[in-house]
Every structure is written in structure tokens, then in C-alpha cells.
Image 1 (cartoon, rainbow, N blue to C red):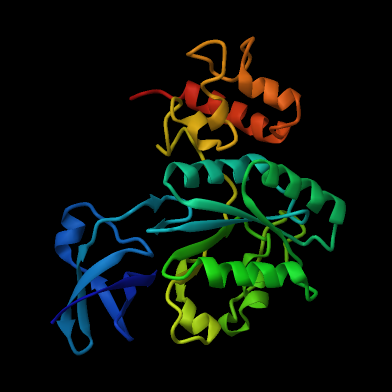
Image 2 (spheres, rainbow, N blue to C red):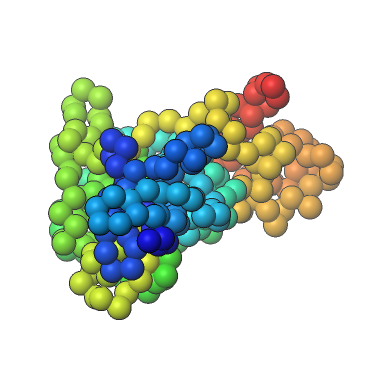
Length: 304
């Protein structure tokens, strides 16, 4: 019997595939391995088998794929960052946003733990709202209207789509998801005081059908929790090129044709429309600082 389904989880060589109303436990077929392919959570796949023995025999064409977090066919990426504990790394957040933009994935920003520093939360929210993103400032320890707004955003905008929560370890992704959708009961943990990372938190990517998460049987779409990470290396991995970098900053794009020089790098040139927008406060300085760091990394990257 041959079926098509959605890959929800993979652990120790065993994959969980949702096909129709059922869940199948599968292994990856040899033909896929011989082609050097590797299934990603979120893949649409073909499986064959009977009873309890199923093989993934084909990975269907992907709309997009990510290295970190390792996911395929994502529509919206919710970038989660905390105001403190751990301290937010804006360069890491902006790298992830640029990777999402390049892959035609809509980024949205969630700022957690605003109860620890409301002023800092407001500053971060201003940066990303100015940049043109949907932003939610949330607390996982108290009922909050913003939490309700985020839940409604997911329910209304994510129908028939796949969205994922991603961010550094310890920012509270699983805790927030539990607050939004209590039926998930995801593992979450304390922050290690020594290294400011989450302990006993998410260790693998997993997709959850929205119908099961919300208890609304007619609701389609998927929601993913992902492991935290500490860095995104633009030199080691081929996310995008130096020439493509400016196009991954959405607030830069309308200005790119207004620079004095056609080959403007938007780093130091006189007559650069992007730099003028930074000086005038139309582009957040931290966003341009992230651009400069990514520019330096990609410029130093060898082409072989």
C-alpha cells in the first residue's frame, strides 16, 4: 500500500508520518539514502508498506528548507527572544530573520519575559516593528492580552500552513507554547546560571497538528517546537550570498535603488540611502549593525 503524508518527528532512525487520520512509524528507504537525501521534519513524503512495516520511499518537492532549525515547507517562523536570562543576541536573531526571508518564510517576532524588564521589551519591540514585522510581547507567568493576541494570530493566520517557534536555548519557547496551548505539555526547564541556557528543554524538532493542539477537529495546519541554538555560521553554511544579503533586510529593499552608486554596499558610501535612513531613525541602528557583521562574514568567505 502506498500513502502520502507529513513527516512529524524523527528519532533514532524512526520517523512518525501523519497519513490521513493515522500515524505511521517508518524507516527511511535505502533508495533515499543512496541518493544522499535526508528527510526533514515538515517534509511531504510517500510511504509504502503494510501492517506495522512502512518505508519512506520518496521525499516530495520542498517549497523551502532550513538548516537551523532543520525543517521543511515552513510558512511562518516565529523568532522568540527573551529580554534577559538569556541576554538577547540580536545578531543571531537577525541572521535567522534573513535566512527566513531568503527562503520566502514570513518572520514574526515574539519577545518573552517582559515581566523581567518591560522597558527593554518595548525597545526590542520597537526595533522589529520599525523593520516591518509582526511583533508580540509576551509573558509566560501571567495571563496577558498579548498572549491572547498571539494565540488568535496563530489560529487565524496559520490555517492550512506550517509555523515554527525558533530561538536561542532558554528563551522560553516551550513554556510559551504550553501557555498558549496547554494540551501540548511540552518539556521545559530552568535556566542554567553558569551558561544561561535552558536545561532539560526541547531536544528535537516536532510538528504538532493544530487540530490536536487546539481541540478543534476541523482546523488544519501544523505548529513546530524546535531545539534552541547559540549561533548561525554564515561562513560554514551556504545560506545566501553577499550579493543577496541586502535583499534579506526588508526595510532596506525600497531604498536600494535610491543610493548614489549602483554598486553601493550600504556599509560606508556617501550618498547611501540606507545609511541616510539609519541616521534619520527610519532603520534601527541594531539592524544595520547586524547587516555590517553579516556583510563582513560573507565578504571574508572563500568561494571554493
